Image (cartoon, helix red, strand yellow):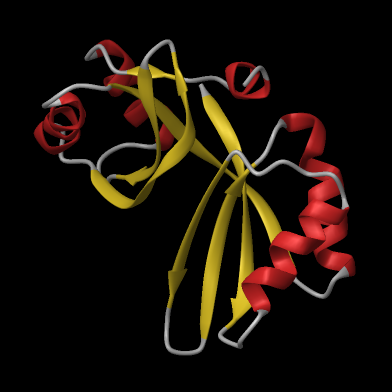
Length: 149
């Protein structure tokens, strides 16, 4: 039900992102999805890779001086048509779920756009949130499906 992403803390310095991408490239790691958010002092790159590449990616990043960690997120297959995303957001809103962040994936699955979402709620845990999405018809993509891309 969940996939794993790697969060990497980046200094806001010229060339830091390139160092991250070159580090992963040199390690033979294919980034399937990536998002970058920044604050005044640092940025956070969120990266999705295949499961077989988790340990190699974390090791390469740490050896290059980055702070990196794995965490779980949901990956939703959103119909790639008008109102596709809106239908997912309607389920989230109707159930009092908050979006901490989201970003699109570089791939699609069976014609569906892929969206990485980190959700939270004051009233339920992550598994309950995932259950609501599934019961409402939102297709959640598994780590095995991501590995097959």
